[in-house]
View 1 (cartoon, helix red, strand yellow):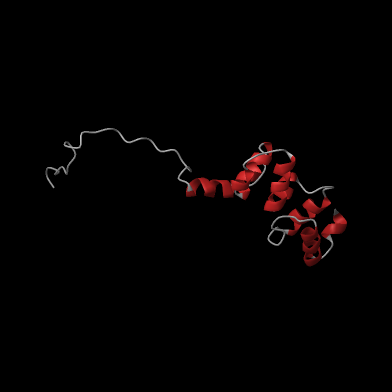
View 2 (cartoon, rainbow, N blue to C red):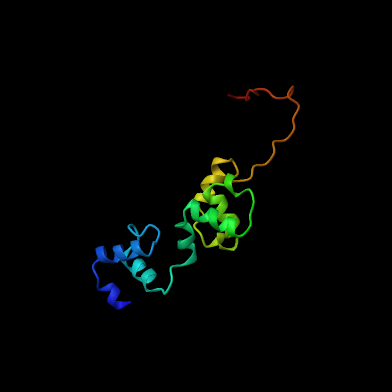
Length: 124
């Protein structure tokens, strides 16, 4: 690990790119050194770097059906459900937000529409 830390950042980034480490170009040097010292890139990084073609191949190997209609994020969740917690969930949150599912809303109370109106405040 210390030998990696002594290398210039540019060289470390090239190594990280070769190992397909996600967003290697914005990670700090110490995080890159830590990831490069591991014998294998963490699963969450490998999953996120997979292409749609690779994900569809995995789905085919597992005998899944209907995977062609899924986007990358949905397909990733189907193929790697246990790893969902280890994968960054920002994209998942954004998808839910786009679909109106980001937070639960309470149903409005049923009210008589004849009773609704503008009420004037006394002493206004």
